[in-house]
Length: 335
Image 1 (tube, rainbow, N blue to C red):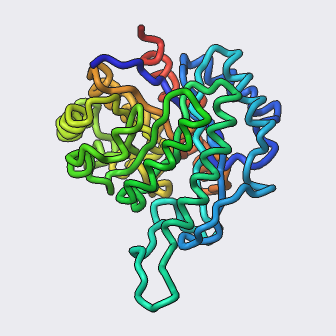
Image 2: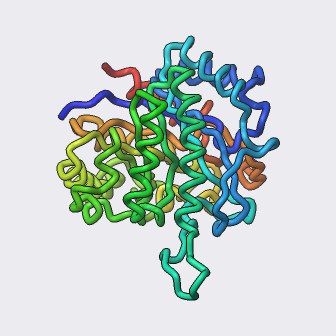
């Protein structure tokens, strides 16, 4: 199995309504094109009130309007890049998608059925019909159902219904991503799993590649060997393209010990971030099943003052103007 590499970047996570229509957004797209980025994951944030709410909705302040999504997607296409449109669910109570879970559906008290899952998936299906239709009209090359809804994975039939809804209005590549909370090898043993109805499957890859700040590239490669072996097994069992739906780390000393963490104590270290990316590419690039990665993330849309407390540079996930950008440009420029 040899698959097209998604030389990807995540763009606009938590971009408020109006951002995608701004001159700044187009400048960002221009910069991405200059780094040989081939795929842009355009994010549209959708809200629900709490992790236990069953209604998802577009918010006038947070959610990008459909017309500006169309505009930025058209601009990305004009720059020669492909698009994965990915709605991502957030909660007003400060919890995140991977906290969403509900009790088993049953009736304990007569006349009071427990229906949280069915109501939540009804809303998810409506949301999917809307955004998958946007993806179809905009000519998006891929559609992501969401990301990291890990505790919903076991709801097999509900997710099959969502995929059916997506495919009823969208004719392209349908995918989804999850964290290491999901035991892929165990899930994929069920050949009736909804994962098999997708065109590809992704994971959020934030595996530690170091046990100390300033680890060398060789040390990072060594740390990645178990992950390579594991995902080879996952891909062999899945039989379809597998990729890193999210992958990144901050440009902070010691960030490669906890790549997912956004508040690592330490000063700016763009070289450590660059070595992380180099090690990941060097380990996975030539794997025939590996569909690539979407770097997390191009832009920081939420105010995090600690990313700006070192005059030497921004300590966050973004790579614009940092050594990791040159690493990306080099690898993404390969045939």
